[in-house]
Length: 256
Figure 1: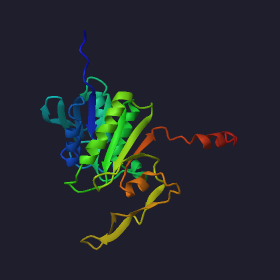
Figure 2: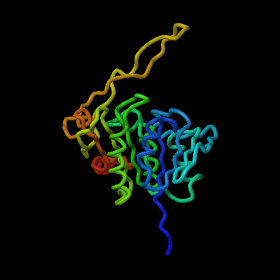
Figure 3: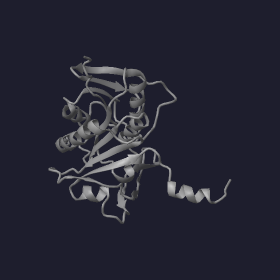
Figure 4: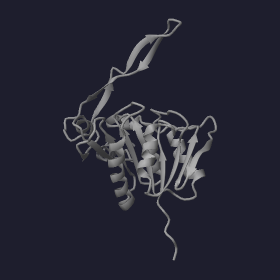
């Protein structure tokens, strides 16, 4: 009788392999399968789906123990996913988990986030993929609720999988304990007042990225609303960004 293999779980992030979030995630997922971590060698926040094309990248083994290997990569989060699947691993992962991010990735942030860019890349490869984020940027943030609820979602995905082209975005509020978890839609909002003007030592104007998030969503059942009220939000996302309703309109416009 052939002995069944443990699930292979690929882990990455955009805060770097030494960040507390990813190391708490590793602890929280122990026992679920073989864990392979390939994460950036330093912070790569805001990288979205960026790839490195002008210079070569490399990776190195940081530590190894039973059912765990941790590697650091000089590239972006998406580079890490591509490198793991194309070079490092001898089989396709059963699951990809990106995080736990130090900071929220709700609403429009899903498009800027390196954490979610990595989750989307896993989905491109047909791997059930999840991004996990905590609305707390502190280095010593409390990730206990992220690990508890994240593991619950991850166990469900390992059992059932995800539809082709769908990946998950799990965000948790800063305050603990979390009141619960709500499956909901991405809030319709954007960042405003995004730059603060200053000057450098030569007297030249420079601009620091900052801003405030404005939630324009008219429907209450959105991720920002639930997070503001102390709940975790779980949003299913799609790789295919085609607007199928407007597609029909364009087809009838005789533009060709």
